[in-house]
Every structure is written in C-alpha cells, then in structure tokens.
Length: 209
Image 1 (cartoon, helix red, strand yellow):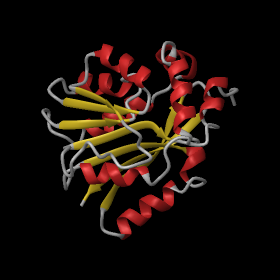
Image 2 (cartoon, rainbow, N blue to C red):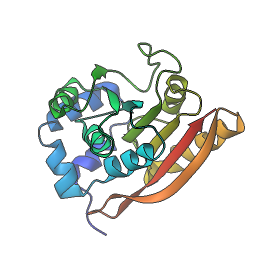
Image 3 (tube, rainbow, N blue to C red):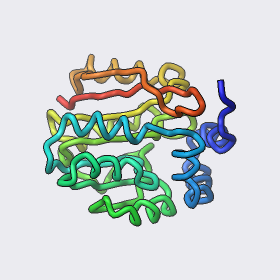
Image 4 (tube, rainbow, N blue to C red):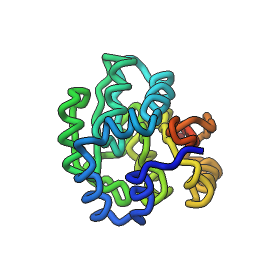
C-alpha cells in the first residue's frame, strides 16, 4: 500500500474544528487541485458527478455541498452542460478557486456541521457532496440538511471515506434515514477514492422521500 499524502493525513486529523479546517484549506487552496488529482489520484469528484448525472435532467438545479475548489462542478458541467450548479463551502479561499472554474451560478460560505439557514426546504433537484464526509470533517448529522433542501424524489449523492463509514457512524445514519422513511437507499458502492494511495470510499446514492 502507498504511503498516504502528509497533507491528507493532517486533513483527517482536524477533529471537525471549523476554524482549523478553514485555516488548513486556506493554506492548501493554491495547490489543492494538482495535489489531489496528480499526486493523490483523487477520483471522488468524477464518481460522484457521474452518479448524480445519471439521475437528474439535463437542466436540473444542483447543489454541490462542500464544493472546495470546484472539482465536482467541472465534472457536472462536463457531463451535462445545461445544469445549474450552486456551491457551498466552509473556506472562502476555496470558494475563490471554485469561482474561477466558471461552473457555478452561486457560491456561498456555509458550515455543513450546522443548519444551512440561507437555503429553503425542497429547493434542489439533486445534491452532491464529494470529499466532505470523511474523518475529521463533517459528521453524519450533516446529511440531514442535504435531505431537507432537496426536493422529494431528488438524488443525494455522497462519498464517504472507508475509514469513516462505520467508525464515524455513516453506515448507521444511512440505515436510520431509511428506517425513518426519510430516504430510500438507491446504491451503496465500494469505490476507488485515492487511486494512487489505495484508499477507497463508499459511494452512496439516496433518494429523498
């Protein structure tokens, strides 16, 4: 197995502290794309965008939750140029980088660990979140708000890093949401995540009830 990138080792040890996360990604924003795509072989944006695009119309309104530098937005528009994509992220510096991609209608700062107060219920035709539900970042409770802001029948597509899937309660949360009748689990697929480090994730597709 390859040695994990030291920046990623630091990232997953941030303990969910929003100030620490914001500072960390501010310092990483300039080289984030090249580090993730070239050094780490990150494919989370691609697999999440592909899973969402299979399940929405060509002109759907999408939220990229935890959009970072906009890697998911680029993959969405590449597949369906007619999509309207909004993005939220905790880190202003990452939003600056995302804005330069030209893939987003709106980009706003938001903490996914709490209520997304600026977004109304039942707004989006689909929601995608790649690279956010992982160790030291947003916990399973963050899924609740993504369900709230998605329309009934909309897909919510998530990547959850393997090391967080059971240990941090995501597997249990997904099961609980279905038991409560809030979502239907459409797909859970064990998928490559960081191809140059042999790190995998669970690609989760939920349908809002």
